[in-house]
Image (cartoon, rainbow, N blue to C red; front, top):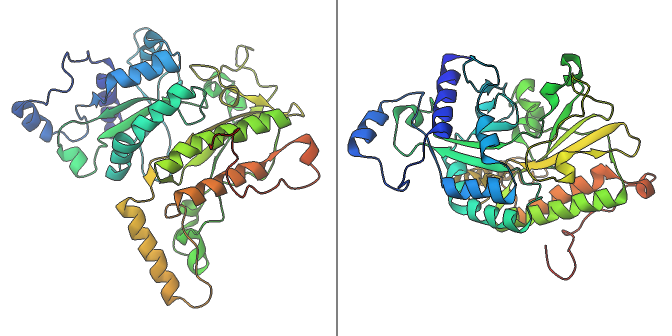
Length: 377
């Protein structure tokens, strides 16, 4: 771990282990603001709406608080407590860590519009949805850390001012033998029929292959499960994406994990499941042929269709289509209408999951999101 990552990790751990103030809404003093302004990497982070996230953890997801806090400590006696830096997992420039026991993943939110969208617009509907449906497949965000003061590090992008702590759907991989860990497969899936300038303009010469490979994953196989398991997945994703549509969110993805059914840990135990309340598609669904275990959640729902960045990209695409000859390009995944993105997302899942009676033909396309009984989802 480099010096920058170590300092960022230290600031996160200090926020997690810091005793909460009696009056957390009290603004920092002028002296603290001046002192904090000159920090570069090791920002003074605080927990945003700490009591709300504690209620999510303890009451809704049934995560014991002591167990949660201990996840951030090393289990080795005398060993320094450090987060584990993870390689580049995304396209946004975020910093990633896992806790020492790998139960939780920490991701920075470097873009101001992502921070404000989740904090000010999506958080309350997200909490209400989780209260009503605690087995939701929206990724479980267990903490939001933020820097309450202006700093040089955040101002010039040298250190992120916001981090989310979330469940690690890959939990259990590190407990397997080293060679077996390579058998785990991950896919960050979005509808692939959108317009991606890096890939689609001028023969895809706008970006190197290393960048284009990170734009979108393709799952070339089928998820082969029972019809009940498929219906449960589609119905759950329909409920989850409904609140994202209502918040005008787009560009979210289905994070799919699979590993062999025969997989055991290095101690020959069953592969452990993510922390918290049981959820079938979170804990793992066995394929019909007993070859794979699948896990799935929704990730990266921080991009709002009405954000300034989305409007700028929409203008750029429209300008390109106006000046080019021939057929114009459609919307990008980050500029699509939220209801249209939701339909394409659910269609993607519908076509990807194969049940026994549909193995001989393609699944029917979802023209509109499925409804649950008489209530619109």
